[in-house]
Image 1 (cartoon, helix red, strand yellow):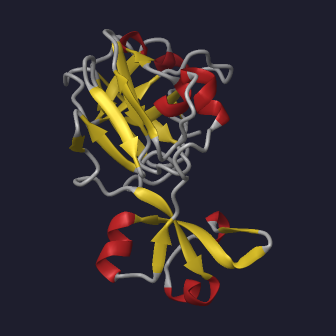
Image 2 (cartoon, one colour):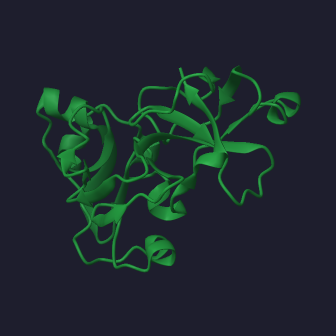
Length: 212
């Protein structure tokens, strides 16, 4: 789960300040920002669909911890993930985003692919196949010899079932209609992100700011 923290003084007043700065601790939610960098967030812009926002999850047992996710669903929207692709109001919402997905790679081909070896893994006894999180744009532009890994429909994710009581998983989810006062957020690293698929709808009162 990706967290960022405000300084103790700012954590109490972040909701009141129009602009604040935070230090980013991890980057599971977005491929374009690096851990340890400073981010600017503001409450001045009206939260808009597909912008990165910061919010405080509830409940939180880690003190002044906040999450950053992409705002994908607003009240009244119908949202569904089919075969790993997000549809909002029956429109492909992923086509303009540079997302990270998990790809299946033949071990013999892995040497030509730039990736973080610490995040690659295999599933015994099929050790000749490696699963690697990669930028979708990087894979497409370089025509890499790999295949996106998708969970099959009907395979239940326990963390999703706990919230929605449906046999859904991270790649086959919904449809759901976003209720009044709620938002639906997703991380850009879809295979590793903890987001509204697992947390449920985010109450607007938890909103901290929009990432600039």
